[in-house]
Image (cartoon, rainbow, N blue to C red; front, side, top):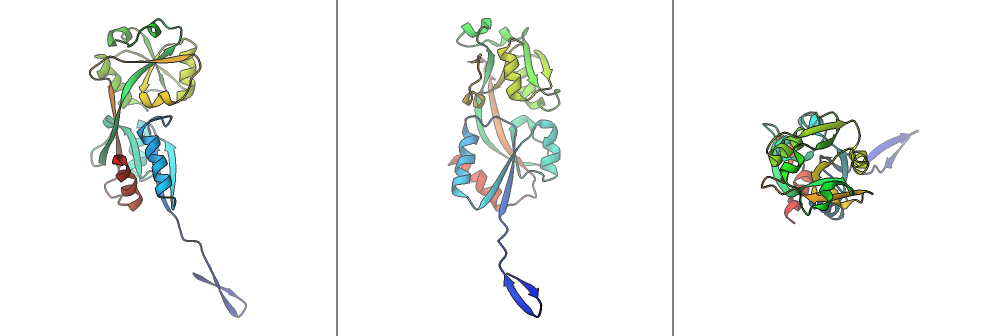
Length: 217
C-alpha cells in the first residue's frame, strides 16, 4: 500500500499486486496435441499467472531466448544452442500434406522416394525453419526440392490445396481443417519430430518451473 498526499492529509491508496508473467515462444502448431493441452492445464491451474504466447521461428530463437525475450521456447530438438537449458516435451509424426487430387493422395502412406522429385513447399525465406529442413532431409534420406514462399503457414496450405506442391509438417497441424487438403503419414524410420523446451540458464522463474512440471501431468 502506498501513501498519496492530498493537501495536509495522507490518504492510503491500495495498489493492485503485480501479477507474475510467463512468455512462451512457440515454434509449432497449436491446432492439436500435447502443447495445446499443456497450455490449457496451465491456464486452469495457475490463473494468477499471465501467460503470453508468441510465434517463434529458428531465426528469432537465439535472440529471444538468449535475451530473455521469452521465458521458454518450444521448438524442434535441433534448434537448441549451447549453454541453454532444455527439457524434452513430446514427439509427433511427420505428415505429408497435399491437394486432395494429388496422385499421392491415393496412397495410405507416402514413401520417402516418392518425395525426392516433388516440390516441397516451405513458409518463409528458409532461415526460420532450418531445424525442420534438417528433420525432413533426414527423414527422406537426402535433400528434396525445397520451394520457399514468403507466406504464413495457413496460406502455405492454401497453396498446397491449389496444387503448387506438397508440404510436410508435424501431426499437431492436423487439428485444423484445410479445404482441399489431405494428409498422409510418411513411412520412414526417421519420420518423427522431437520437440523440446529451451530457456536461458539464468532464468529461474517459478512460473517456468510450474509450466514444465505439467509436461508429465
